[in-house]
Length: 113
Length: 118
Image (cartoon, rainbow over all chains, first blue to last red; front, side, top):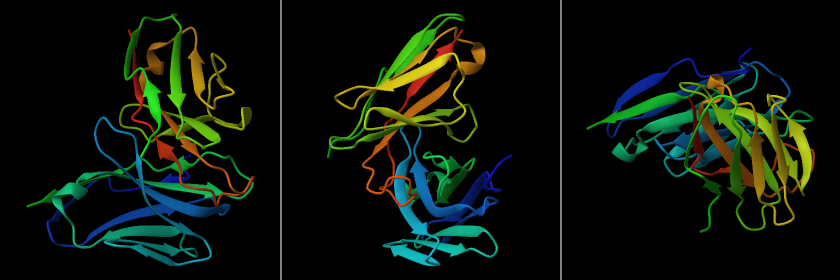
């Protein structure tokens, strides 16, 4: 049972435009959410996080939005750059749950020139 | 800045052999996690250690064991290897500030060990 879902395996966006990556979760115990970026042959790299007490967190070109009632979060990248082409993983952690993060299956973002 | 170091980067083993993967966390990080990522799959949590003690267990097979040593490095030991064990194995580390809370530092991942079982 996939507790963190990224329903788009891939997403193609033109350079300069906004990239929106979506993530849904089912476990109401999750209270901390993270986005990781992964290039081929490298480990995931932390991008941005948000706790459940917030609905938005911004860091430069990256903004994460959290809608707790819908159990949905999204990552916005504005403007998209060629170096943003990578696989993006949504991950979640919960109170009293496993120490480890629960990951989604990832979305492959392709930035087109 | 120092990152999480994993060795070896690639490993090829035959069925029923054993393998040992090593992970050296970022200095002053006291918590280590192991993840397994199969082809086209999301990373699956295997096991974690905090201050050299096993902290939590995920979907780690009984054929696998792991430990964290006094210098905080960790080793994942895999025995009776099966074809299905072929995967990328990631180690991640963090410094745990709030024990039992999810609001800890984000995990920092190594570049992984690609294990191929033939």
